Structures are given as C-alpha cells and as structure tokens.
Amino acid sequence: MATRVAAATLLPVLSLLILPRTGTCADDYSAFVYAGCSQGRYDASSQYASGVDSVLTSVANSAPLAPYANFTAPTDPSLVGLYQCRSDLPASVCSGCVSSAISRLSSLCAWAAGGAVQLRACFVRYGNDSFLGKQDTTVLFKKCGGTPGDSSGVAMRDSALGALVAAAAPVAGGGYRAGGSGAVQAMSQCVGDLGAKACSDCVSAATGQLKAGCGYATAGEVYLGKCYARFWANGSGGFSSSSAGRHGFGLLVHAAAAGFFASLAYVLSLAI
Image (cartoon, rainbow, N blue to C red; front, side):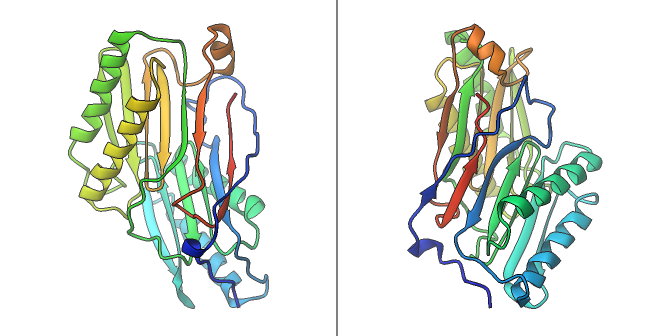
C-alpha cells in the first residue's frame, strides 16, 4: 500500500536545484519554476501507482480541452490530481505545458505519494493530502529584478497590481486577471479549485507580497500555494540574467517550504 502523506506532522524540508536559464523567459511557457515531492513513497506495483497513472493520464488528456480540471483515482477517492494552465493562452500551449510538467514530475518525483510542479504557464499537482478546494497563500517562490526604476514606476506598479485585486473574478478557467498602469503590466492566475472570493483573497496576498518586497524592481513574480502574480515594465520582457548584471541590479529570490506541501522537499529554479 502507498505511504500516506501527513503533511501537518512532518518537518519542512528545503532543497535547491540550480537550473540556469539564458535570456528572458517571458515566452518560454514550459520554463521550470519550482517542484515539490512528498517524503512519503509508494511501491511501483501497488494500487496507488495505478491511481497516480490514472489521474495524470486524465490530466494530460484534458489539457487540450480546458485550462483547468481535477480528477480522482477510480480505486482511491483520497488520491486527486489537477492541472491549471494560464487561461489566456491557446489550448495547444496548455497541452504542451502540461505534458512537460508531467514529464518533470515523473523524473523529479518518481514514486512520491504526492508531487507538484509549476512551469511558466501551467501547474500540475497530485496527492492524497486533501488539498483540493483549500486556500493556500503560503509564499513558495518570489523573484524581483530588472533595471532599477523610480518612484513613478513604483506608483504605476502598485496601480497595475491593484487592478488585479479589483478585477471581477472570471467564472471559469482559474481566475486569470490582467491589469496595467502606464508602462507597467500585471497578471495573476488562480488554481481553478478556488472559489471567486478565495481567488481574490489569494491574489490580494500575492500582490501585497510584490508591493512589499520588490522595491524599485521593474519586474517581479510571486507564487503562492494556490495562485501567482507577476508585473513587468513594458519592454523589459521579464527577467534577463544579462541585463541584471549589466545594470548592477540582481535578483531578490525568496523560497519557502512551509505550508503548502509542508512534507515536501522543494526543488527550485533560480534564473540568476
């Protein structure tokens, strides 16, 4: 039988895996952000293994059809899998991203009772730790960078991020939102198992993290347990290791293992 994940009783574990990238990643939809794998394991010949295969196969088959879905293993109602794509992108991008995410899970989280991976344009998670429908605003990954800005840029950033919070949550697709102010654009995405209010609360927490932690940075992104938010100045295209070094303004990166999958060992990509 599979080892059950008891996240609340296990100590957080944090580990870093450096996966360098070159240039900007604004359009690299399958770029790796982070992954987590539970300490609990299962046997390859177990019924749980069949359940994991079933939910991940369903995830892969559904991705070309909708930006979000969740599935329960037919032989184990506690085992759930879900995916969330950035719901403004074409179905072909969603399908390709989810396929890459599942491949990442297979290599990074082999035989783990629970696992999650966030790529640039999609999120995939499976496990038996009752995460479906539960709010999680734990900060998992935060990055700030770009060319240093000024107070007017900060005002535009705060206005753009405020527009995300004020926007009405879409009925379906995980609550994708976009906003802008002057030269600054922003976007956010919730996981589709959250209701409208929970999504708004998560986006509010995410934008608050960016406002408080990114100073005069002209680009930033933060990933919470059930949503993420980003902002960037027009023309910056996101993060570039070359531009950061050229302007003497490096990246501020924050990662935490507490909360979401507290029993997981985190694997993070730092684009520095």
